[in-house]
Amino acid sequence: MFLKYLILIVLTFVVFLLLDLVWLVKISPRFYKKNLGHLMADKVNYVPAIIFYLIFIVGITLFVIGPAYAGGRGWSYALIYGAIFGLVTYSTYDLTNFATLKKWPLNVTLADIAWGTFLSTATAISVYYLAVLIGV
Image (cartoon, rainbow, N blue to C red):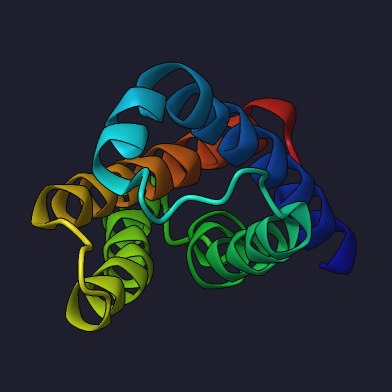
Protein backbone atom coordinates (compact mmCIF):
# COMPACT_ATOMS: atom_id res chain seq x y z
CA MET A 1 0.00 0.00 0.00
CA PHE A 2 2.87 2.40 0.80
CA LEU A 3 4.37 1.91 -2.66
CA LYS A 4 0.98 2.51 -4.29
CA TYR A 5 0.58 5.81 -2.45
CA LEU A 6 4.15 6.82 -3.22
CA ILE A 7 3.48 6.27 -6.93
CA LEU A 8 0.24 8.24 -6.65
CA ILE A 9 2.13 11.10 -4.98
CA VAL A 10 4.70 11.15 -7.79
CA LEU A 11 1.97 11.11 -10.45
CA THR A 12 0.11 13.86 -8.60
CA PHE A 13 3.25 15.97 -8.39
CA VAL A 14 3.86 15.71 -12.14
CA VAL A 15 0.26 16.43 -13.18
CA PHE A 16 -0.29 19.23 -10.66
CA LEU A 17 2.99 20.93 -11.50
CA LEU A 18 2.42 20.76 -15.26
CA LEU A 19 -1.09 22.17 -15.01
CA ASP A 20 -0.12 24.87 -12.54
CA LEU A 21 2.89 25.90 -14.64
CA VAL A 22 0.58 26.51 -17.60
CA TRP A 23 -1.46 28.83 -15.37
CA LEU A 24 1.49 30.55 -13.72
CA VAL A 25 3.64 30.97 -16.84
CA LYS A 26 1.21 31.31 -19.74
CA ILE A 27 -2.22 32.36 -18.53
CA SER A 28 -2.07 34.45 -15.36
CA PRO A 29 1.14 36.55 -15.19
CA ARG A 30 -0.37 39.75 -16.61
CA PHE A 31 -3.51 39.31 -14.54
CA TYR A 32 -1.55 38.95 -11.30
CA LYS A 33 0.90 41.73 -12.19
CA LYS A 34 -1.97 44.11 -12.98
CA ASN A 35 -3.95 43.28 -9.85
CA LEU A 36 -1.26 42.37 -7.34
CA GLY A 37 1.83 44.14 -8.64
CA HIS A 38 1.86 46.38 -5.57
CA LEU A 39 2.17 43.27 -3.36
CA MET A 40 4.49 41.13 -5.47
CA ALA A 41 8.13 40.53 -4.55
CA ASP A 42 10.83 41.26 -7.10
CA LYS A 43 12.00 37.64 -6.88
CA VAL A 44 10.03 34.52 -6.04
CA ASN A 45 10.97 32.86 -2.75
CA TYR A 46 10.94 29.25 -3.92
CA VAL A 47 11.28 27.55 -0.51
CA PRO A 48 7.72 28.32 0.69
CA ALA A 49 6.40 27.57 -2.80
CA ILE A 50 8.03 24.12 -2.75
CA ILE A 51 6.73 23.49 0.77
CA PHE A 52 3.21 24.43 -0.37
CA TYR A 53 3.44 22.06 -3.34
CA LEU A 54 4.61 19.19 -1.14
CA ILE A 55 1.90 19.73 1.47
CA PHE A 56 -0.84 20.22 -1.12
CA ILE A 57 0.19 17.18 -3.16
CA VAL A 58 0.37 14.91 -0.13
CA GLY A 59 -3.00 16.27 1.02
CA ILE A 60 -4.85 15.75 -2.25
CA THR A 61 -3.30 12.30 -2.61
CA LEU A 62 -4.20 11.18 0.92
CA PHE A 63 -7.68 12.70 1.05
CA VAL A 64 -8.87 12.47 -2.56
CA ILE A 65 -6.83 10.44 -5.05
CA GLY A 66 -5.87 7.62 -2.69
CA PRO A 67 -9.43 6.92 -1.53
CA ALA A 68 -10.72 7.25 -5.10
CA TYR A 69 -8.21 4.83 -6.58
CA ALA A 70 -6.63 2.67 -3.88
CA GLY A 71 -9.76 2.79 -1.74
CA GLY A 72 -11.97 1.76 -4.65
CA ARG A 73 -14.34 4.71 -4.48
CA GLY A 74 -13.97 5.46 -8.19
CA TRP A 75 -13.63 8.34 -10.62
CA SER A 76 -16.70 10.20 -9.35
CA TYR A 77 -15.11 10.43 -5.90
CA ALA A 78 -11.96 11.88 -7.49
CA LEU A 79 -14.08 14.37 -9.41
CA ILE A 80 -16.31 15.55 -6.57
CA TYR A 81 -13.78 15.50 -3.75
CA GLY A 82 -11.04 16.90 -5.97
CA ALA A 83 -13.28 19.92 -6.56
CA ILE A 84 -14.15 20.22 -2.87
CA PHE A 85 -10.49 19.91 -1.83
CA GLY A 86 -9.48 22.65 -4.27
CA LEU A 87 -12.36 24.90 -3.28
CA VAL A 88 -11.60 24.56 0.43
CA THR A 89 -7.83 24.95 0.18
CA TYR A 90 -7.76 27.83 -2.28
CA SER A 91 -10.66 29.58 -0.52
CA THR A 92 -8.74 29.41 2.75
CA TYR A 93 -5.82 31.27 1.22
CA ASP A 94 -7.72 33.74 -0.93
CA LEU A 95 -10.49 34.63 1.48
CA THR A 96 -7.98 35.13 4.29
CA ASN A 97 -6.04 37.50 2.05
CA PHE A 98 -9.23 39.28 1.01
CA ALA A 99 -10.22 39.68 4.67
CA THR A 100 -6.85 40.84 5.99
CA LEU A 101 -4.94 42.66 3.24
CA LYS A 102 -5.85 46.25 2.37
CA LYS A 103 -5.59 45.97 -1.38
CA TRP A 104 -6.31 42.33 -2.15
CA PRO A 105 -8.81 42.48 -5.05
CA LEU A 106 -12.06 40.53 -5.19
CA ASN A 107 -11.43 39.55 -8.83
CA VAL A 108 -8.14 37.87 -7.81
CA THR A 109 -9.92 36.07 -4.99
CA LEU A 110 -12.60 34.71 -7.31
CA ALA A 111 -10.23 33.85 -10.16
CA ASP A 112 -7.78 32.09 -7.88
CA ILE A 113 -10.49 30.07 -6.13
CA ALA A 114 -11.89 29.06 -9.53
CA TRP A 115 -8.41 28.09 -10.72
CA GLY A 116 -7.66 26.10 -7.56
CA THR A 117 -10.95 24.26 -7.82
CA PHE A 118 -10.35 23.43 -11.48
CA LEU A 119 -6.70 22.52 -10.89
CA SER A 120 -7.52 20.16 -8.04
CA THR A 121 -10.37 18.54 -9.95
CA ALA A 122 -8.30 18.11 -13.10
CA THR A 123 -5.36 16.75 -11.12
CA ALA A 124 -7.46 14.28 -9.15
CA ILE A 125 -9.32 12.89 -12.15
CA SER A 126 -6.19 12.80 -14.34
CA VAL A 127 -4.12 10.97 -11.73
CA TYR A 128 -7.00 8.58 -11.08
CA TYR A 129 -7.17 7.61 -14.76
CA LEU A 130 -3.37 7.52 -15.11
CA ALA A 131 -3.26 5.09 -12.18
CA VAL A 132 -5.94 2.94 -13.82
CA LEU A 133 -4.09 3.08 -17.15
CA ILE A 134 -0.70 2.05 -15.79
CA GLY A 135 -2.10 -0.30 -13.17
CA VAL A 136 -0.59 1.20 -10.04
